[in-house]
Length: 453
Image 1 (cartoon, one colour):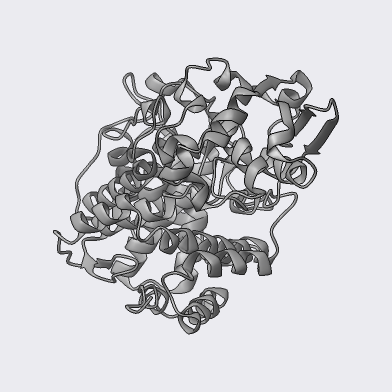
Image 2 (image 1 turned 180 degrees about the vertical axis):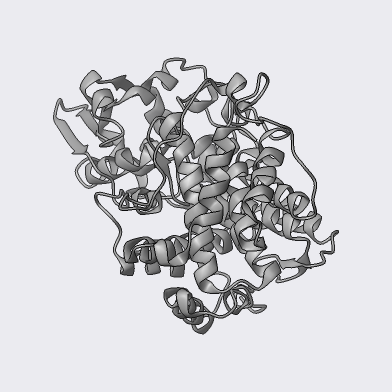
């Protein structure tokens, strides 16, 4: 195995719960609460129903359960179904250094693998930090928009976390990484043009394939030699790279540096949403003559006004469209799942505001990103008045974190249509004491949608 894989496998094999600082343990529990809320909140979404139907065709030995129904399936199919749910609303956490992604995608694999082996809470916390370190290290070193989807980060992270929970030694962990890397280069076309249901399912697929790689390695299958550094390895596709230092030995754990989302939309919209909500209170939509949005490099995505990002036809495109999201927030004073309904996609008021909107890149904002996420929106009214609002760190950013009460409120709001308050209380109580649980099944068995809603 090459040196890059050896570093990953050694780190995953050697990291122990006692190596984790209290902040990494505490923030891990917050992200589990946040992510599981996102999953249950998307229980009724069409991709969620499709993924569950597929999972129900499979039987596992050992098995893992699908959130909401608790029907047993194979661990890899449960990971796909659960992963499709937790990503659907684009509401789970985000991380951005050189490139971006959603490291909590990996929890679909972590929890399926943990359920299948009856892992305790400490093992789940440790495996989650393994997954986040691997995923976010890719983001630290990989430049964006190379043509490969970020879920490549996830499949490797999921193989490592699953292997950790399955008890793989360092050699088999290395084989799991090789078996995850080689067959799973995913195309970034997933996030181009008019976006499809696959946008929210790609990460679940990475979780599925990561678990499968760990299962193969567990049973003795070997992976290709030098899968990262070899002539035709991952570095041939992505370019040469060296891992940044992994968390531990006094260094910070990356899980603590990820951002939670206060609104269900692409991370680049989080600051603009807050600015738009501030302006909503000052200007009526019908009084708006022009809207100018100053932001960082992401503005370059909106130079082509014929792009679907200016005329979204699907929910998936709309929740990735800054112009659409800003227009909806200016009209409604918030962004929620209802902002992306079929009815809202056809809302003439939003279309009218899009015609009045322009996005500009400010070089100083680009230089500041991603240390900060600056945005300024200025509105000119028909009467000639100018109103402006600026945001640097959105609510949920690691430098402007959501409080525990806000994380709980998000969980309660997302699960309210599907669970009675007593069940919600029980889940939260278990997750806040996760390190004390003898079996993660104590949490999984509570993740059932109540029959009477």
